[in-house]
Image (cartoon, rainbow, N blue to C red):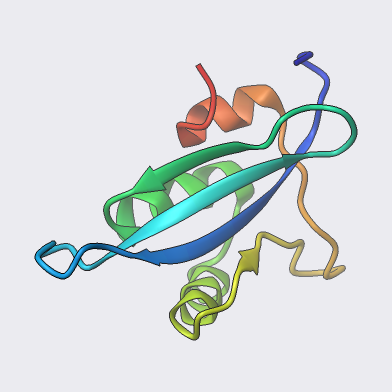
Length: 102
């Protein structure tokens, strides 16, 4: 994996075990644009991930709420540019800020 590889992000809710009080976990997958392996991380709660996303992607609270509602509906939510509708791309450094890279 090189420093200049860019990644798009996909989010989805993953239902936890029935005895898990947290209920749903958020799965965040970084898909490389070009060769490379996808990277995945799981977060216990949406709020900490939402805070990280707003810092890295400059997402508005409205945009983050729309992402969350998409996931609650059972769909995968890509992180997109609000103005163009195209996927946002992230560097390895930004993935580290999100907990997806060492």
